[in-house]
Image (cartoon, rainbow, N blue to C red; front, side, top):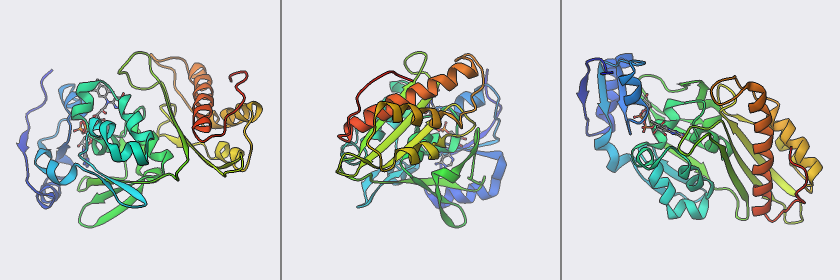
Length: 297
Ligand SMILES: Cc1cc2nc3c(=O)[nH]c(=O)nc-3n(C[C@H](O)[C@H](O)[C@H](O)COP(=O)(O)OP(=O)(O)OC[C@H]3O[C@@H](n4cnc5c(N)ncnc54)[C@H](O)[C@@H]3O)c2cc1C
């Protein structure tokens, strides 16, 4: 199907983008990689009267910078740029791994981190990884504000962004040296959106115990969630198979999946337990806290 008729502008500065957003408000849509917006326009799910292309801001808003205690990623950075970033491989290895699993090569070359977070698809990968990492986003409107990712996603395709705001940067605190991490995405076929996706970070205390853990779960609720009770169960413990089964059970508890083409709600709940358990085994092992691998959840 053809999209509805629209005007097209490609401003050269953030200031110009903001002026256009103020002028057109809800009538306008920002175009980043176009990998979600264009299909939605073609299917007439959205029909903006003005498309504001961000392509001329690539030089300003596509970067990955080591900022000391955090890595700063420009909103127009593509999935492929994250996948290939040496800085991220060294400092936040979870992120290049997540990038590898986003769609296919074409999607990764065009799609952007900012676009994915702003789009807020409940089955997207970046919101889950960023939640596990306690990342935040910088949003520029009439004033600049920083919003933790935990408060950014408000529902399916709904975020804290106002129609007059531009997402400019993602700030990712560096996990401590020696941390373990894991990304587990269950997909029906290569390049598909997730049935369940899980990000786990484990920080060891140097004496065989877990100092802290972070577990984020996606695709099985309206927005990704942090498995807070499961994280608490791990803290200060020497992990064993029994503990991990309990933690996986607790992590799946908040899931509220719906039955669809990817499986029944009951199956997805079970799958969440399995994927959390696998993610924890891998993250613990990378943190030097191997667990005797026994019966899976
Ligand atoms: C076949 C296919 C498979 C895919 N598979 C996956 C997958 O496995 N995992 C996954 O996570 N994603 C997947 N995606 C989605 C893909 O990652 C998109 O690139 C991403 O969701 C949107 O990024 P974009 O840069 O293309 O944004 P666009 O499509 O350009 O924009 C998306 C929305 O965000 C808004 N927006 C964009 N940038 C900004 C900004 N800086 N500030 C404010 N608003 C902004 C736009 O106005 C629009 O509403 C897939 C897409 C397709 C078509």
